[in-house]
Amino acid sequence: MAKRRTFNPEFKARVVLEELSGVKSTAEICREHQLKPQVFSRWKTELLERVPEIFATRPSRVDEQERIAELERMVGRLTMELEAAKKASSILTSHLSRNGR
Image (spheres, rainbow, N blue to C red):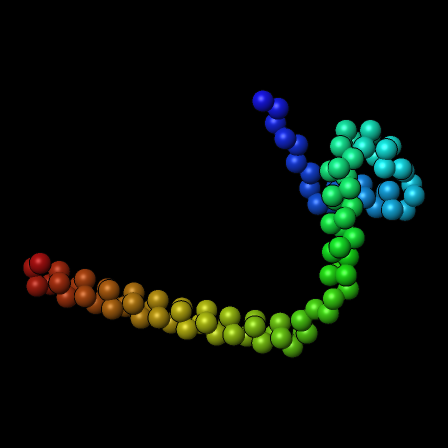
């Protein structure tokens, strides 16, 4: 059984852009890269459908900064909880070993 080839997104974009810019025809691209025209057509359709996403508004820097601050607070809280658990564990361990258990 033949193994299916996989193509990374950069390759797909480059190949489709060659056709869209008029550098090469669809037939030339398919022959050069040994692609079926249906595969190339699917890549081209997907690219053209998703182009508007590139220009969609991104979350503002303020939203990103708020998320970062929230995550930093969470890391700090979890670090403190971990330290408290380590201290409690060492106290219990030393207490149990002194009692001969």
